[in-house]
Image 1: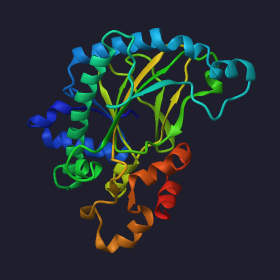
Image 2 (image 1 turned 90 degrees about the horizontal axis):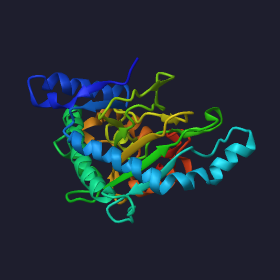
Image 3 (image 1 turned 180 degrees about the horizontal axis):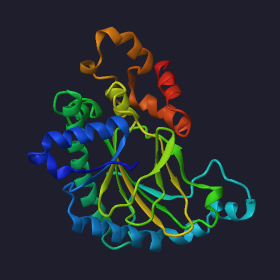
Length: 304
């Protein structure tokens, strides 16, 4: 059993219907899939690898090795439950970016521009597969027309861990938002997705983009596209690179199952499962309950 790998370029040819079906199946059965031939220039991806690797080595590694987390793991001798063996920064359009690593800012700005375009293409495919009007998901996330959606990029590294049995790289969770696009390490594995009660590794494949669906896609799709539980294992060798970009609703956006997908006969059942809510309210619940089951989050936000 392996996470589906899909050739995104085949949407433009005679295999379009087959490729749409593959993506629909991946969304319904996995909540995770890998895209190859996704249109992001390989030369850009190679630059991203270079600058993020240099950034970690020059600006982050020494501090991580001196961190409380490393000392705690060395000294405690026990399993650490409420921490992650991860070094992470977040890039937004309006926050402060690292400035010491040459070409980091210009490379990551170009990368984010390309990834946002890819996210919108993936959402249009979801629109088509769900029988929604073109642009439906984007409009819902942007709270109407315009560019109000949240687009953030998490640059993470999972350094070699001397006791991987005692700490997770990243604890199991579902993602709160919409569509997540991950550029993961070519060689060092560790990302796993929960499928039919089993943890399945998301195999490292050079220069693919891993797509996964968040909680808001589950709501909009009326449960057809479930957000998947996933985690990262820590490992003794290799410094795993992980660059995840999140296309999420605006905090002001109202999220609810798409009316096109709600059959009148099942209206009551749907209302019991997925409430209508403002995404900012959902996030206030999520930050407290990220690593807990997601169903109570939907119930908590219904009561707000």
